[in-house]
Length: 341
Image (cartoon, rainbow, N blue to C red; front, top):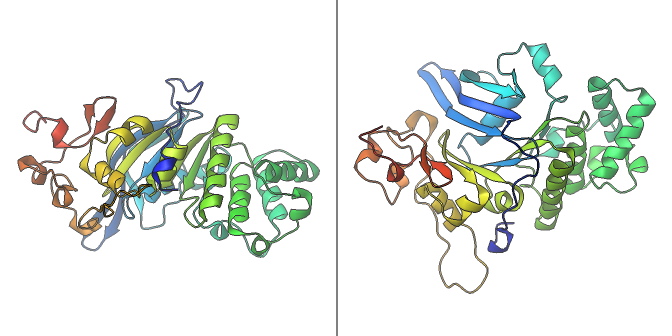
């Protein structure tokens, strides 16, 4: 899914107005330690409209999954939201008590994780897991939940769903298990779906099927989708907009079409150059020199400046904010005046 042939941006979602379903404002996630707090997500802001797919992309350690976990309310201690706000259709959800947070999770927010075996209980048939989830969030009888479970499995492409209800997770292939997890995420018809690396462990043909399924579910159910991945090919095939993260910060955000065609941030450009190309180019695969900084060693100024081929005088001193550049935002001094910041 990372070849040039996959880079076909989707049109903007129909019916997606100016009202946002999800708003994340200046989110900051910290991990307290004896030597001070480590900042893993630093001032992240974005929104997602109903029916829109927003891709969150970056290397491992960029803070993508922690952003998703903070929204769902599943941050592992000692991780905590230290600042910022998260709003779901006009309701602030980052400061809710545990029970209120659990009521929103599953009912209004569905989650799809990278390894479906972590989301499925190996000791129970998948039918029982789905029907119990349905009855937890919806006022349905056992028979109605059973019928809805069959309908959900059919919708996500599980063949013979009536018979497969009695099967255990280990009796499904990796791709079919991921489809079951998607069915679980849709149990209560959530308004928002957070998909964290949903195609990483799958072969290319199964990846394509899961991507097509996510596109269809977003379009037909009107749910907003936050797609977390390190794969620009998956983003190009699935998302309407993309937010590029580096060292806990968003460095570029805009429509997939514009960002892929002409990246504004050197890090985004590096990610694009690292995508394998089809055809006899004769050129070696490009890479970004260096590695993502550790949380306790993030440099001052622009966190990317030590790896950036276009760095200049203010980059190692002043942290750039997100500047408007064309139809997107980029946190780079190439697009802003450091004296005016």
